[in-house]
Image: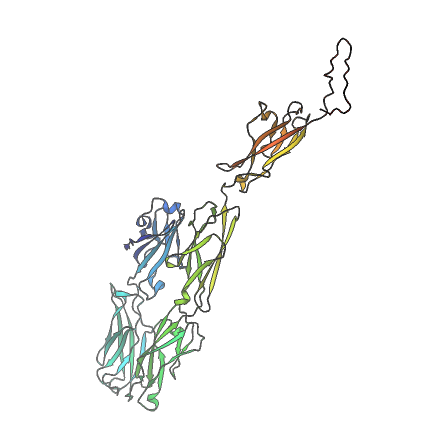
Length: 574
């Protein structure tokens, strides 16, 4: 196993670091095998994977790799067969991300799957038959079926051999499309001496140890058919739009034969071995029309190479290729996947705080696969795009729970196809309270009246304050502030119920001793630290007729009363 650690690590956005690791492992590793020490290679602190709730995020449904957060290692979860995973495509790799929280971070990981020589070359059929005229000229070519090896690179097919070589030799023509295998006549055939010839074609790969497969070639020697069919082109090209209806004629190939009559009748066939071509295309054996019989999906395969054969009744053949390009149609909506999200944030969270990370994927190509995302209006959040179609939902302005305690954030993603396809997801985000509002009294000051000689403990008045915060931060306690009235503590006159704000008289008031009581009450919430506000309360004492008149003048002297004249117009004076 080879490990490559990509050194490029950079800050992706506030609170999130994006790095990339690359490992190379051979296919068919046993379940539980260690791929690499992810914690060591990323330079993470001990237990960061455990405390960060580290997990694997992948767009691929195949689950081949597992993260052991305790040991900090990636291990093989399921047996990886490179051929099942990638077929002939190289390089073959698994792509996924490691997601951590508190703070949110994610890292890209690429695991290259190296091929091992676990597949032998094989032919679609164990034998093939030719009917060749004894008049076939020296140099006549006969196209042979190619073998298929599911392995790649050095483990793929490296050579072909044909035995015996009395009448035929093998020639390979290598081009960008692969190897064309031809059996070339080097010695004239004689039906009378040898009416049937058996040859063995062997395909050998370059693996260690080498593996091979064979096919028996049975040749029946016929009389006089001395012209082989010839295609008008060696390579044809065509285009088909994905999801075109079955029965669509993709192209028409054409071969001609200089012979006449029975020997000039040409039959067309598709010779692709094992692959999916024959499940999608068929050729009309009489006129050479290549017809669509299956579904073409641009996202599965963007092109097809169809190998065609033209055979006459005398067994002579010619071959050609039809290269079919599949044109993309906007038939895939953008896929929105939540990588990590916060369900609750505090109202005092800083601007540019990452709330959610989402992944966007559109399987179409070109403008059909270009996606832009946007949010619903009038919310204090914005979307910022990152590389690899990742988006961050971040705070864009200050939050106030007292205005909005919950936000329903709709993320809509639309591609640039015509017509455009879109998808959306709604995220519910709760805003938790902080103690940022002091209690507020209903009035700036209070004044009330009480008649003297009241019953001790009687309720005089109720004050009321409200707090815009929530829960404990909005729980109000009423406190009588220390002060004095005529040198006597105010608590000797009144008391305040801490929960209800009811003001009670401690004892009976006497108007002739005190005309009013003025004091301050503090309303304090239950936050940490607590917030408070004060209000002034004035209780005015009202007089009752509870004292009889007393004659202070004139004064009695020796039992006689001194009379005094008071004019009738004299003013009243209490």
